[in-house]
Amino acid sequence: MINLPFIHMTPRVQLVFFVLFSFITGCSPESTRKPLSERELSSVPDMEWRLHNFDLAGSRYTPSDQITPSNVRDLYPKWLFQHGVIDGVSNQTTPVMVDGIMYVTDSRGSVYALNAVDGHLLWTYDVTRKLGGGRREGYIFRHRGVAVENGIVYSAAGSFLFALDAKTGEPVPGFGDEGQAPVILDVLHLKDPSIETAISVGYWFTTAPQIYDGIVYLGTTRSESHIAGGYVLAIDGQSGEVLWHFNTVP
Image 1 (cartoon, rainbow, N blue to C red):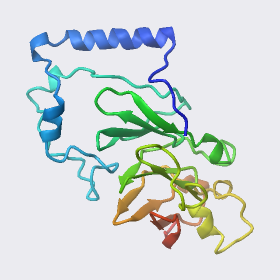
Image 2: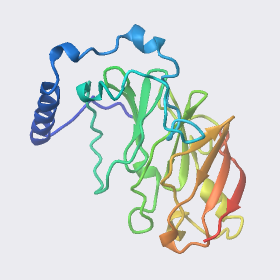
Image 3: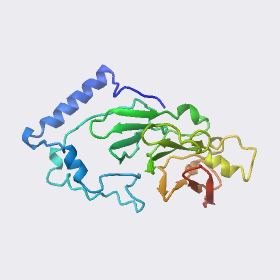
C-alpha cells in the first residue's frame, strides 16, 4: 500500500484541465451552483454504489434525485483526480462509493481510494508487479472496477483476485497469499498441474467482481485467446478459495 499526492499533472495537462474547468463553470450562473452540504448528503437515502452496475440486477439506477433533466445543464466539476497510468486504452472503470469513500481503478487493476467529498487520495494499492505475464503473455490492460462488501474491496486484476481493507488499503490477512488469490490457476491446475501462469494460456479478468453474501463471482475473458471456453468462478470472500467453477462453451 502506497500513499500518493492528490494529483500530478504536467503543465500542458494542467492547462487543458484549467481551460475545460473554466469553460464548464462559466456556462452556468453562480446562483445555480449549490453544492450539497454534508447534512444533505447524509439525508439522501442509499447514496452508496457498491457494485459495478449498482446492484446485482445491473439496474445502474439510484433513487437519489439531486440530478434531474431540469438541472443537469448546470452541473460543473467539483474536483478532478488523475491516477497517471496510461496504457493506450480508455479508462473503463466504474467508480464505486461506500461510506464516503470512492474507489476507482486504472487499466491494470490497481485501486485508488478517494475522499468522495473533495477528491483527495486516501490510499492506493499497486498491483503492477504482482500480475506477471505482461503484454506478451496476455492483454491485461483492461479493468472495469471493484466490488465492496463488509469492509473489503475486491479487485480482479490479471488472473488474480485481490482483497484489500476498505479503510487502509492493506491486503486482507488470510485471503490467498497476502491478499492475492490465484483463482484461475487453482482451477486450471485441476486439469493440468504443469501450467505456470493462467495468463500464459489465455485466462485472465477484465470484468468487475460481483459479490453477494460473502461470495465473489467472476468470469474469465478473452475468447480471442482460443481457450477451451471461459470459466465462471465462485470464490469465498474471506479465504480466496474457489468454491465452485463452471466451464462455459467456447
